[in-house]
Image (tube, rainbow, N blue to C red; front, side):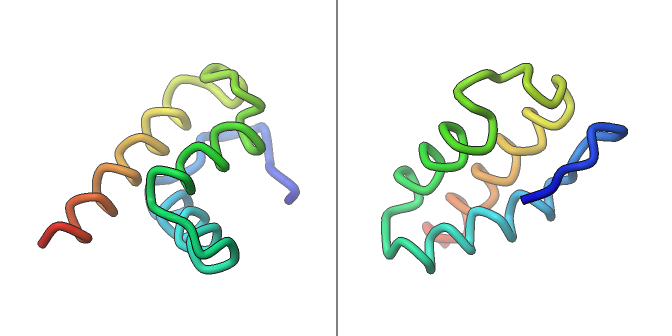
Length: 69
């Protein structure tokens, strides 16, 4: 996946990306979060900046909420 380092990635971007991981790997939401963190962020919260990482966490929390509703 090509990522532009010029700006932060949105919550919607990460919701879509996590859903893609969920569908492709048939895994739990928690496992999908770990896969994204390991592969996309290379286990470094600061890899794409603080705002991008926060948007990733917000997207995860939103998906978690959607599953429990």
